[in-house]
Structure formats: structure tokens, C-alpha cells
Length: 163
Image 1: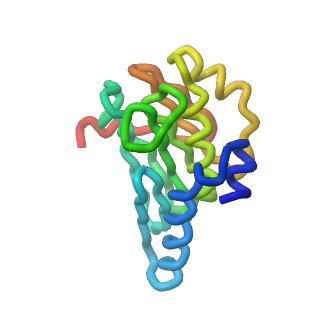
Image 2: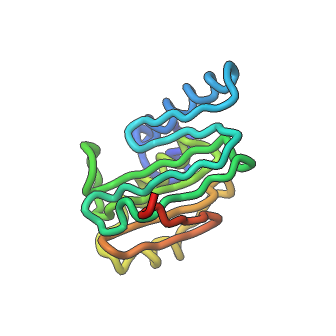
Image 3: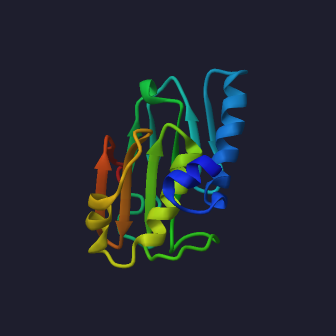
């Protein structure tokens, strides 16, 4: 947690849910072939099949319309989301959802929290991503604010509105 938080320049509790999901996930992968651990919007994935993670961004019109396609050769990994409009966790920002895909679930959690804290307006989404120093272990980022979306990295979005 401390290492992930340090990389995101945020406090270590920002990575606790991701760290727990990751720890449980790795322990389970020693006993079975496929694992999905979800901990309040923070997901550890270890699977031999392609998975789609749906984006839930509260009242945003993008909720239920887009998902992130995860290939089996990129797993295990973490997919973590922080939101200012959904859930009980405190966010200092206003983004509907900041989702990070990373090799480390704790790192994904810390970065999702940091990003969500920074977004105040929809016009800041691209600006924040453009100025961000992204560690190599972060594979991709998806941020939403209302009907606006910003994308960085190797993330494949798919339409899930018909599924």
C-alpha cells in the first residue's frame, strides 16, 4: 500500500481496498485457475478467458454503455475505480468515475483515487492525463465526468449497452 500510494503521491489508505483484493486474489490463484475478487469497485482479475468490466459512473449517461475488455494474456491485473458521485468513500474531486487498469491492484486503487481527487470540471480530464507521470505498471486509464470521457494507455473500450 505504501509503495503504491507513494507512486501516486497520495496517502496509503487510498490503496487499501485494492491491496486486500490483490492479496486475496493471489492467494486464491495458488489454489484455482480463475479468480475475480471485487472489493467495492476495486477488482483483482486472474482469468484464462477474456473478461469485460462494465463502467459504472452513477448518473453519467456512460453508465451501462461502455466496458473495458481485458485479454487473458494481460492477467493477473487490477481494475480499480474511484468516484465522487457513487459510493461512500470521500473524494475531493468531482469525476463520476476514474478507472485505472494496472499490473498491481493496489497501484490501480491509489491512482484511481488520486485522479478522482484532482478532477473538478469535465474540461480537466484530458489536461490531467496529459500532464500525468504514469508508471509503466499502469496499463490504461478511463475517466468520466457527465457525458465526457478521457482515455490513456492500452485500454480497449467496448459497447455493452446491448448485452
